Length: 197
Image (cartoon, rainbow, N blue to C red):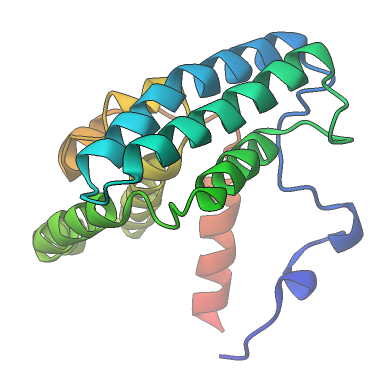
């Protein structure tokens, strides 16, 4: 199968914007995300302190917190401080503050645990999907698996409560269809057309 770059896949690549929320325009979403990021700072600090034996970790964690909290305060006063304001920008600022204090992969141990846990469940999950008779249902279940796996990357406050759950619990948190952005049926139809060629 020939590989195409992203620009060949997108209908209008020059108009593509990966961010679904413009926090400059949506004041309610801006308040929610600034508040959420501010609340998560202590979680980051505590995680850094509990997973690092370096004697400088406390001062570095405090400097990280100061850096990020000050950035959030600045964005509350001047949302245009960076020319744009998106969730991705908030996460980028967080990463910049972490890296400035030598925290290059704060979640490395956590990611290893989650990957090991997911791999341990993979064969049984694939067997469940393979046992389904309806091809469309198989694709639906695989798509739900992608959504459930992606939850672990969300910054949303609601998602933090499920970070300790397993695959099946994560699958149960996926809302019933239709989803907010639901192109699953069209995607499956395209797969079926491709399968007939």
